[in-house]
Length: 402
Image 1 (cartoon, helix red, strand yellow):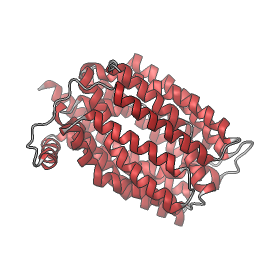
Image 2 (image 1 turned 90 degrees about the vertical axis):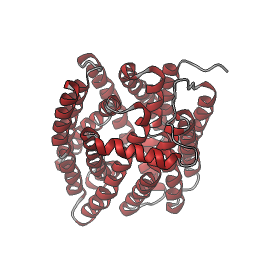
Image 3 (image 1 turned 60 degrees about the vertical axis):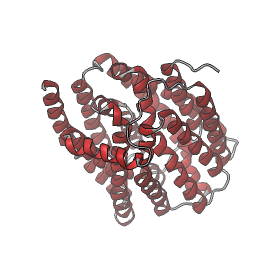
């Protein structure tokens, strides 16, 4: 089979990946709570194990992508994640689930940074911004379709069966990538074969340490991770425990909310593509800062809402503005291509530290005070990113003048 055009491969993979995972991803919290009987502490522990794993493996696997092959790194991650989902759906037991999530987290670190770095290498920095935005749109279109399929399947199939089938779909996608994914422009870092990992880690640290803008990116990753932990694990619990959910089952409401957020995000992405010139770093950063302001406000409303439909609306706004993809585009525009995957992976590792700090604290507040108090804490932590955005804008402007 001939290798396909890299842009086409990237769009196909992003779309199909979203299609397969979209059938079950919104069902996982319901599966954990209803089928596996997991309590809030166990939900947080699953997240903690994942983030510890990411913390340990993120940089080494990023170095694999920089030193050996972006393509191989992405395919390893895709195969691992698909297999873990396929197995996880077979046995709804906490210990089994947390073990599967451990291995899935390792797979995620092979993908983190490497896939974006691969397409950037293959088509160039100047073209990648628009492609990343279009890929986000493609994945959301297929995500909408697959969520509808998942809602329908949940009315007559066990949730575990849906999860396993989706995981097998991801495995098949990885097999497709083996034969279709080109890699013509990859240039490995030139460290000795005896110590490639240590040399590439040293290079990545030097890039971060020597550039104030890179340090700002890392600080923002810490804030994002600290604030994401609470919202990611507790928003479903907020609906289930703090509201009388009307008319539909939680799985059906969560699926419909996901579809509505995807449709709204598609419209938002189209507006952003038309409004901002994606070749200008400052315009991208300004747009990302604006979306984060809206996100902070929506999270505060979500935490304080006393009515189910008000909370639903605030959650919809929050989920819409969480997935614009603007910040990763801006980060890619400001990194050395030789260590791009390593630095992005390092930033992801710092986000994992944020999860480790924010998750247990948020879980403690949610247990001892209330879930709304925990969500408010997450919103206030996220607000700390706004002055960092301001600093990044200043540094970007200074960098453009040099």
